[in-house]
Length: 296
Length: 260
Image (cartoon, rainbow over all chains, first blue to last red; front, side, top):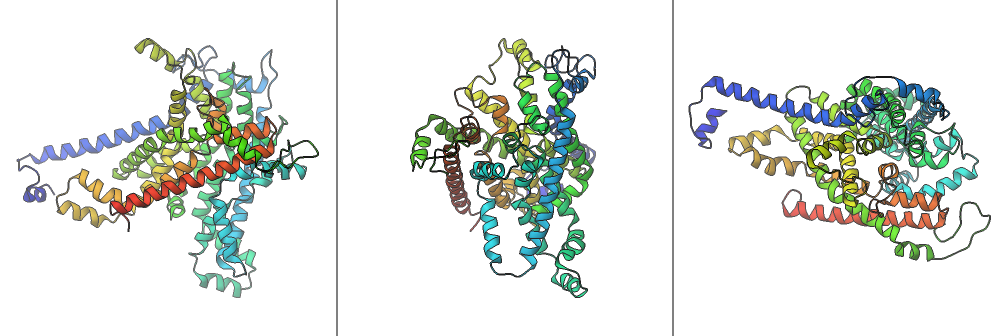
């Protein structure tokens, strides 16, 4: 390549010993990796800060970047409180988060699968209209519906219940849209064959279409899970009972009056962040494949 | 609902016509919410584009461990806004490591969240931090769909790497650029968590966002009709801004000959 450039006369023709060229290329490669590692380090610094300071002695939290010793005092505080403050239901909140997120995500994925299949593979009247409405709604800011949804949910008697958090978040238009476009790429022959073999339409969805779309389903599920797990606004307004609050909401509401306990709040944040981090790292292999599909 | 003055509790409500809209348009809080979306945009759009594009180019140029680094840069997207806001608040608190660093090196500590533009900058940086890895993945997919032959042709023509970037990479990334920009602009009208935990909209409403105002009016001031009117205005603002951005992008793309 160097010779080609030399022939084109773009670069000055200087006799550079071959070894030095190789060395220079290695240096350039190494620099790139160094830059990438530094970038990732910057990206994870807030996580590090959170973990370090959740383990720091309380007189060092937010005082020195790297604490001189590590203790579990903040975590103990979460469970037992202190002499002056009764413990808040942190573990209960973690459980609530898990219930609400798992329930919501499961319903969103199932609903996405079924509706996506119907929109891409079944023929019925008004199909295009339904699809267009969904597309339109997707780009329509959901905030307009915040207050009306709140009123409907309250009228249904779901205020301050798990269902109040799950039901309004049980349908994801984005998931429906993704599944619809993905199912369009499944060959019609396979579906026809399944029909001839006597599978019901629902059977086709769960026995044929779902197994064929594991990578994309994983990515969609991950994204929905992440988004639901960190949801603040809706969970904040629909639940008042401390025993039903999700962990995210509990931390947010505690951050005011509990301003004097940053260590404890960091510990709670670590507990909030860990599950999602672990889940993501387990599935990160699927994630890369699936993400390419999501973008198409 | 938009036309009523119901307060979520009372059994009866009155029809108030367009009064909610008129009041919202004149309210300083709503005007500030409108302006704050653009204030955030000033920082988030250029910074976000530059950072995510840089990440994508860097990761794409690596020979090995591409997936590993892509995942690494994506990690911030997983963070809950509440947790990150706590970290930022703690790190910037009085007597904190960051504060001490400034005190020792510059002799004074900026009032991070008390200064309007600093507060905006900090929240913008948090958003850039969180979303860059995600947008970088979109750019990365775009980069990998560029045919290798184009680069080979450029190399044979003796184009410099700078020239290659402007004449091949960027035009071929136009679709990715377009969608990332629309996503970013849309996001600027829906900020809630960070200012809710960090600034509550202050100082002097500088970081007061649409969603904060809607939340406040509906669930603290208990004016649901008024809040719904504001959210309708919010939706309108998003639509119009996104339309304008699309126009600009399309014209720009045409003028540069990137799309036809």
